[in-house]
Image (tube, rainbow, N blue to C red; front, side, top):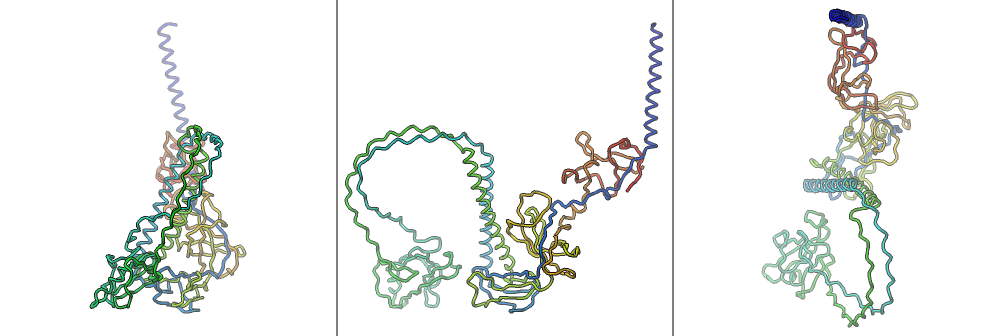
Length: 536
């Protein structure tokens, strides 16, 4: 073949290639103009997602009640109700003397904070134990050699321990009071005696009692007092009043008098110790060499320590919940000291203000009288979001009718046995709650109902977009959907995704609205530029 022929051949191939390319392009244009892709409104395919959804069942009843117990160290100033009186939620029941409430509230807050710190420290220790690598098992212990018989050593009587010098004070409270002790309060007069705060086993020396009557013209009066928790603000447990004119005889200077019993403490004589014989020499015993022990914990030791630490955290968590519950009760009455009814009902079992129960029973009970109550369960994952006032829905097993109920109380403590189910972690704890059904027409006491929380999600979650993962494709790590543009042709729309639910539903955080129309992004019509048609 000549050079000229080669050139002609190449030109011919180029013309043919251009013709093929033009045919492909024409076919693609034909497809775009004649194929149509079905699109749907995002609002029609977006799913309802209740991340913390929870259902349970219960029995409706009208015997729900509120028990009012008397707080420790509190004095009732007024009782606003009478036996058999009907009350509504929010009505005052009793009021407390709030003189020391601010200090008590601060102390309880300190208790809650201290317990929380202990729990956080225990959690850090647990995390450290879980991240600790176990060492190799320790070698077997060496068998101890036989010890030869030794001569009998005569018994030596026990020598009593000599106590260390006792401090005069523990904080503000005295362990003993002598002539130089300073009073905690008072002026030393008969109307306002000097007050000495005493520990429960505090004693007074005779030289102190003698000093009270040294001034014949102006006798000194004192009150030796023991208070709860060893603070003057605690409840007074006992007091011993002594004055310069009380006729006490002259006491031995070193005599000791117990404040609690007002009786003399006798000095204990030290026992005489018998002479001891010289101890016989013991034969020397060769100790075997012990194998080196690896530093750290074996797997078995770690497992035991982790188990103990987890139990400690559970105990601290339970204590924290109790402390927080007491703190919440104190905060409820911290302003005016008034305890209010939490339910509608009738006052029953009302005790007397001056004769408080000592057997652990409540001061009064408010028994439900209107509407019906039902109990359900919450997952511990819901405690931050669900509060009193939340609406739940009760569906009757007998009639199939639905009733609205309002949560009135959520327990601070989980229950080991429960009748609840839902999505999420199956290993969480469940907390009982009580809900009040006001409109009970068609519902009878004792009926079984199913309880659901369709309205428990937040506004952002309720208005979110949740579509099947199949509608979302990936391109070099970027997510996109095929959306109908303003010209009614498909276009790529890049989106930002959030959480995935149940493995097949994905949250769309950015890039789509409920009014957008999207197509299924697979098949021959799933291409940019394809005409769209809306379908149900």
